Image (tube, rainbow, N blue to C red; front, side):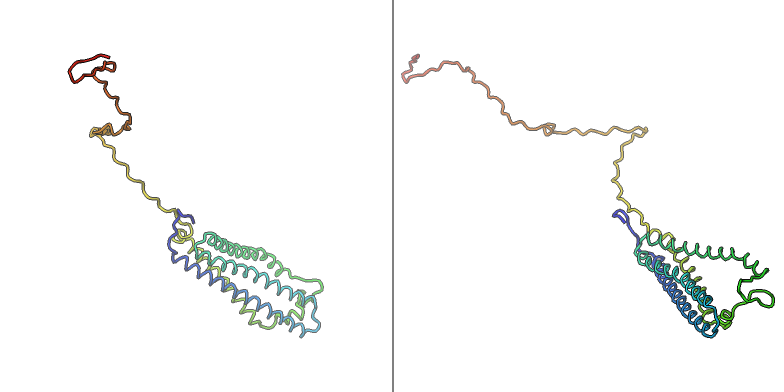
Length: 272
């Protein structure tokens, strides 16, 4: 902000957006913690079921462990990045940083894009699932059931046969948390886009002082301009610089070559 720009007082919408950003970041961190806790718990379940089934295929056990870790990373890492992103932009937004506001808009758009891509990718696999359900799937080396369809191994059947209350709770918490995050982020974007908040982030230039009024030019009632009157100075000599030369003195009446004479006390005159 330059000296010619005046930022208004912080509106209520910006303060509300600040607290909603912090709440969203805390909720995202909770989702990350739930994801990590579920991954650790399910890894323990894999180890327990592998001990119960002595002839469990080591490749199946390794595949379940890898899928568990991969799921936790795919869900937890973007969630953690988003939490740090929103928490880092909260304070700049409160201080009136327009860059921070733009970063919040980018985060909201990225969430919508990710959700849209996930929904579209799920629809892409729908025809494949219908085809598998109609034809059946026989994997090489798998155990065929009575109807010729693929049958799960004893390890997988034991692992997923028992109810998983913690897994269901984690899935429900993650789904509800995702909806809440989208709602809070949308509310923050809406608050920061309102006109009072926009004026706070993009202050208007300060009003310049009005120029002095121009004196009105006299106008004749007939419609034409009257010439400006000229004032006559009562002392025109005041506009000329004073002279320092003195005027020459007048010569004597008799001239400069008149003869001089002297008189004596007796009254006779003598010439020289």
